[in-house]
Length: 142
Image (cartoon, rainbow, N blue to C red; front, top):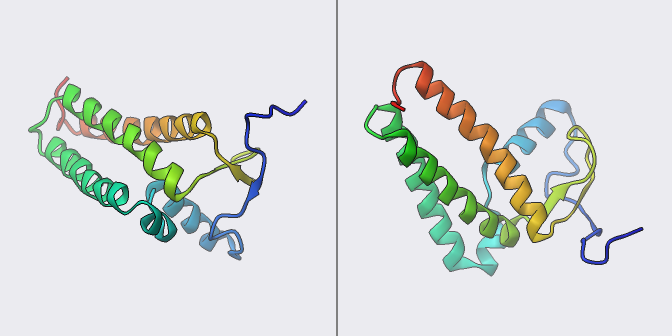
């Protein structure tokens, strides 16, 4: 039974036609790490510009944390704020999620809950790697 509130329309991301393992892997990495798109900038200029500014601020926050000048709570708060904003940016710029296994190449239009789950899990993994790396080098105090 199909849920009528769930989008099921197949979507092809811009890199869908890429050939080769390295090209596809690089395109997937870029898609996960860079939430903006050219079409998204055209539709939501103010939101996209604010997103770029917030992305720069979040990057600076990680650098300041790596220098040992930011507490763990501040890092977590910044990362949560970035995640909320990334959901908004992605819904306007890259409104699709992967359908099926992670190694597959099927995508579909994303609902708001799809995007919240995708961004939350992705940023949880990225944040955990960055947080544990900073902690293991003694650059972050808990």
